[in-house]
Length: 436
Image 1 (cartoon, rainbow, N blue to C red):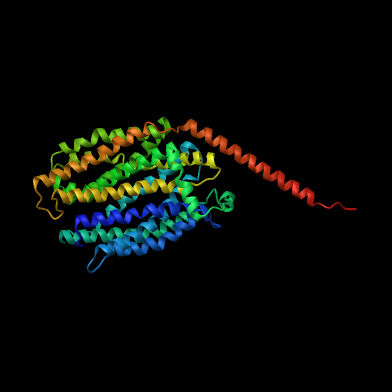
Image 2 (cartoon, rainbow, N blue to C red):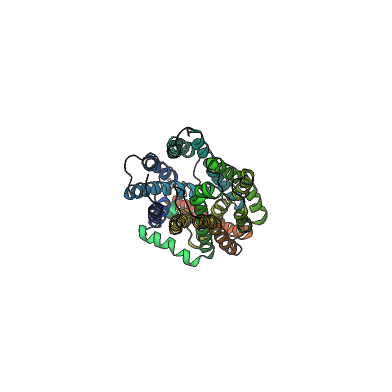
């Protein structure tokens, strides 16, 4: 639509930085204001109108588009997306308290999310008219993605909220009894970030994983077009990448069950560190070699998200053990925030660097500009995954520790329930009037 790379990068970064406010706020709202539906489903339903309106304005723009237009509608889109994804992840984390079952639930959730991308790519491929110009083809692809989104979003949400219940629907006494203000609860939820080592390690790793994924996503189309010289197949190749990601989700779940989630994340990160640099050696224009490379890269596309979401459920157990509250929404907001900030910074930084080395998306690039693009495509994920591997090896919660925490939490719940039952029985006894 005519905006420069630097402008687009800056707008995405600024729009995403609002998540610093909206994610913790949404986490508190999700935990604190239940309805008869529970704590999560009503927020998911409320997100749909926001997402559909902003999605239409972004995927079907017309006329002269300014930076302010893009920023405004991105802001609305990201608010709706926060409402949807944060509530959805928290809901999944509460469906089961078992260490491995949490990974399985999040694996299904993340696997289907990853599978959605190839479906969108297929819509983009089949919507393109071969005889159209490249600019028109790009417009057709983007509008096909928008139509896919606008049609299927309300259907998917309707199926989810009508077919799946909430286990904590009636377990809300602590939330309802709390007299803390909204700001006090946000502050109280942020304070553990400084004290809870597991939480700090997890959000740090999620930040760098988000940065890595967004860097690859930002650079992919340019890498395929100008470095690999396979621009006509860019969407088909992306389809290969995400299909590999979907197929690998069951493998990472088995690895997590055998080794533990943190060790599985460690090995997945090392896998990326070791193999990604070989991309620099691939000859341009050779299709089969790049297909193999994308399959290798794709095996990890959903693994970190699956593992992190399962691990955050275990971190919530630490907080519940210490405070007596289950603040799943608030803690997952820290996880979504770290990923989003990492992704936003990646988009901004990658576009700024491309602009600085003289890269142009319209072509006619110097050798220096193309070399800078190729190096960025490799260096960003290697550095980020090295940091992730370093911290994941030190993650303190394994299966044995999580089971110990759940046993203590369940015992405490049983004691509270027993005390309530005895209190009710005592009150009923006092209220009985003997017949004369």
